[in-house]
Image (cartoon, rainbow, N blue to C red):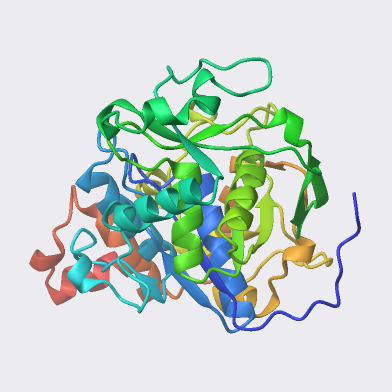
Length: 363
């Protein structure tokens, strides 16, 4: 592991949160969005929301709405990206690098795949997905003339892993992480039918949107060497990478439903304040080398530094979150507490029916 260089100056970075709308906003995804947002704010950059909506089976409009609503509740507002009220309408996108729906960018991705074939970095393949030899090469590797006239619906496009030195990921949190090329197999970049895969599409989109830093969960680290090779093959500038630790439950395993609520929506419905939740999320894996606990979003925007993000998994502690929530609740004025409590009194009190005397009594 090489040590990080603390003297590197960061100016006007472009970062993105690129979720797939296949469910509600997960705690881990919310923290990834928060860290990207804080990094952009800290260094006068741009925070982009791009939607990776190519999974047509699992993607739903409701999930996309829940995702947008969750980020708005947390106060994580994007500078560029899909429209808050009409995220599926690319004509309403905000920013100069749209469209911000991945499915609307497939032609650019396909053009890049064709270019890789022309450059000798990719090839057509009609093998079953898992059929490879010990070298990681499938039988299509050396019979490209036979495949030339096969309809694209029946063949995929694979990226060719050529012999060479190890692929080194210069990670801003983990230092240098090395991957041997012998351990990386040729991989599909376009599926039969012409749909680009995630590992390929994300590179083309990030490059086209001029992303300078890719901040994401460590579960994506194993994808990074493949993506770097695609950047290099297309002679694109490789962005900086930072892989943040996963969030674990109290038992040390990856956070899941067996540990309790795992989505932002669930905590909102339980009565947690967004300010408390953001404060707690930021402290899961980051600290400014002090004993301080309470940070407003404005504080975090001023102080956040990737160099202070731990490379070790963060442990989610519900009791600690409750402590944060209590601290923030006690700071509310009576009027603020009353207004925030009204949604939870809806079973008994209808705000529109409150007269002044009842309001004063409740207050």
